Every structure is written in structure tokens, then in C-alpha cells.
Image 1 (cartoon, rainbow, N blue to C red):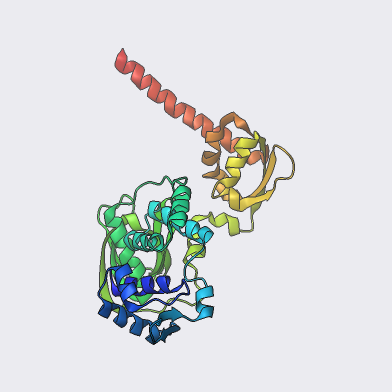
Image 2 (image 1 turned 120 degrees about the vertical axis):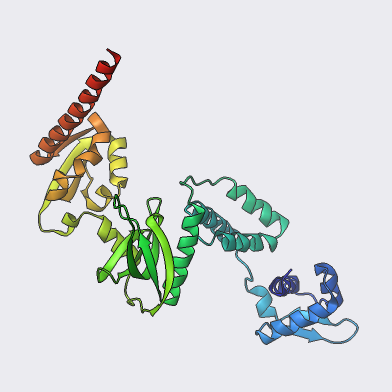
Length: 331
């Protein structure tokens, strides 16, 4: 074990409140007695209230108040940390190795009853996420560390269908995980504004000799959410969108990232009211509603009903043309 592990183990053994000799500690931990002395010296230097009693019945013990204080987490806290590690690992958290070591260390210093309790609860939780590629994990590590140190990065970024990646210098402010995708938010020196970028589209990162200060009140999460939500939500032209339908369909719709932020009222059974930007009703909102089929009805506005009819007709014509082509090939 490392010196830190030995020190923590000694503290754990001393929490019994009984006097323990250096030789007993060495035997329990299977280390040399000189290692025990060095660890106790380090603990005392760190402020741990270890008392050394001399004489035939002497030994080491902890000050009473320190024995009564919680050295580790209680069972509920341990369970929560293990569950959180599962979520982080499946979400593609870039420092999973360190997280796993921390959880292993947590389990190592629990008794058999606590460990059995933790394992029983952790086995009942599972998280399903699309695996994060190892290359993306390395990019996330570099981005997070650069953000913490205030170091700018030279970034090659692939934009959509453009054949060659664009180059820019980025001041990374923070990484954000949203809907199964990792983003980096930062100040783009090419565009001279704060922007967000998908990490899976980053081709290359290279450290440059430039330092930056992240704005004190800046929130990468809030910026990303504002940039992904429709611009029309913050515009003056907001339109009431009233829907009725099956409760399960309305429940799912209210969990949607767009509709969830636009929810105004859901007091009547089988009915819900949103406020959405007029432009969004003409563009992507109809495509979000299409999968719900006949489980939803639009009560207002009429413009959304008309647009849904147009989109449905376009879809019908699209697949009808495919059907004709297939039949011609067979003929």
C-alpha cells in the first residue's frame, strides 16, 4: 500500500479508542514497525490528535473527540457515491480510472456488513448510455485540465459537411455533458465570441503559449442551454401552443428538452399549454410532434395545425415516391 493508504489504515485502527502499540499496528497492516513510526509522525505533523502513552500498558490512541467524529462516510453517503460513480462512468466521465480507485478505497475501509450493504445496493442500479470513444475521453481530459489551468488550445474542428477542419485558438471555459453528447464551451479567438463545440468533432488539440482568465460569473451549462434552445424562446413573438391527448404522450412531451422549458400550464387532465416562438413552430416543432401521431391533438394555434398538415403531406409524398421507385424496379 502507499504511504497515504497506510496512514488512513492506522487512523481507522486507532478509532477503536483502545491503546494500540506500534507492533500491533505493524502486524495488523503487515508492514514494518519503522513504517508505522514514520506514518504516525506524518499524521501528527498533519494535525491528527494522536496521543502516545508510555509504560507497560502504553501505546497510541486518538483524542476522544476525534474518535467520535466521522472519519468516513455513513452507509447512505457511501451508497450515493457509488451510484454517482456509475452514472459518471456510463456518461463518459474522463477521469473514470481515478474515480474507480476512489470507490475501491472507500470499500476497502468499510467493515463486512457495510461492504455487503453497498454491493447489494450498487448491484440494483444500471445506466445505459452510448459508450464514449477512448479518443474522446483523452480530449475531454485535455480540455478539462486546460480549463482549470487557464491555458488556451489550438483546435482543429470539423464542421458538418465541410471537407477540411477549421483551425482556431480556443480559451476553454468548461466541458458540459448534455443528452449523451459532450461539449466544450469557451472563447473562440477566431470569431471573437463565446461558443460551444462538440467534443466528438474535434480533430486535434495542441497547447499554445497563451493564458486566459475565465469570467468569474460565467456558467458553461447556462451558456450551452441558451445556445441550444431556440432563439425565438427569448424573442418577443411567443405563441400559445395548447395540446390535448393521452396522458402518457403528454408526460413524454413535457420531458422533452424544448417543451419542458416552454411549459406554462398543465392543470387540466389531458391538456397542456406551452409558449413557443413563432419561428420554431414553422421549422422544427412539427418534426418533434410527428412521432406522437394521433395520440396528440392541437387545440391552438391554427398555424401549427396547418404546418403539421404540410409536413405530413411532404412526408407522404417523399415515401410515396420511394414506393413508386421500388415497384418500378420490381417490374
